[in-house]
Length: 473
Image (cartoon, rainbow, N blue to C red; front, side, top):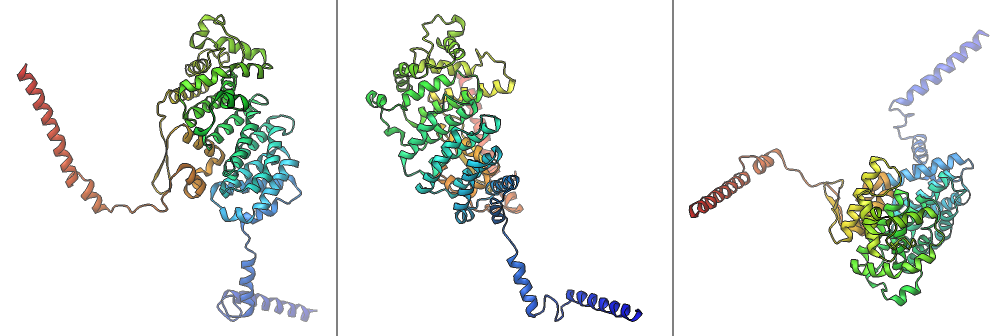
């Protein structure tokens, strides 16, 4: 018995000695040239799985929480980094799993799937008619009827609307008929549903309007009457949306009016003629509005003085374009929103400030003034400058979709380079050394002395001109 215990102890000591020898550069170590060492290296490389592929595999799990975590992780990966190769390799898988989540998943899973699909489309960045046709019907279905209308379902609808808008903007870029079809669908959602969903539909419509060749659109009254979704009817509908109580919906409607004014290249007089011609038709189309909205329309139909004079200014109480005033009533309503006048609801100071600043900028844009340019500092020191109503509207929409990944995509995504018309730097320029800075920027440099001499000469010239005036007097 004692001999067996001694043998087992010796065997254990030998095995420990063999294991310790693996850390040395001997014939049995991994650094040696044995076949076992080479096989171990190959196995280690084969077991290194990419994080993106692991999340793709997790989309097929049965547990819903696992799929939700995978969708969220994939969305974070696509936001944090531009992964065009991964999206191209797994495009069919991402598309099919996201559509399956939209059809049969929970509210959270559907919301995350719509977000991931939007990021996937932005990362691909190339027109693809077949992919658009595969996504179109399911995205429309999710945007129109998502669950029972609760808060989570509203988020699913808004995310689906954003995804549908991006699909038309990117995938159907070469097919204007498809883009117009999506715009008609978005236009039909302005007057029904949650205010947040309606605001998302208005913003999607105006975002797609910036991609159309608007100066070539028909302006004749006959063609306007033939198209139910013409700009004339849209102006009257947008004027009605400005009477809504939801601040986000009001702002979206005002932004859409400014986008029409900017993209279509028409003057305020043309907009007045369009809005006045569509008032009657819009009154019949919106005859089912609530009584509270009609009272608000009567209050604001008299323009800026309507609040003082009541509703006895000849208001017709429909359409939202201010009775028969057309664009003048719309501009009057925007002026009142810019002054925070006549709002029946008590709003916070932040909401009042947001509404005031937004509509002041929109009014200046409608009157032909230049909006302040948006400047975005990029990774390597260069700056993107976005000017105009259409450019700022595109910037706001894409920044909201990309969220924290806007800088990464702005630096590397060719789609955003085409949208904003710029090419970013790929590396930071060389910095000046301490000696070069001292020679060019110090107070004793030649440039600084020249500037000092110029300022001295200008001061002396001013003094001499004043003295000459005193002498003449």
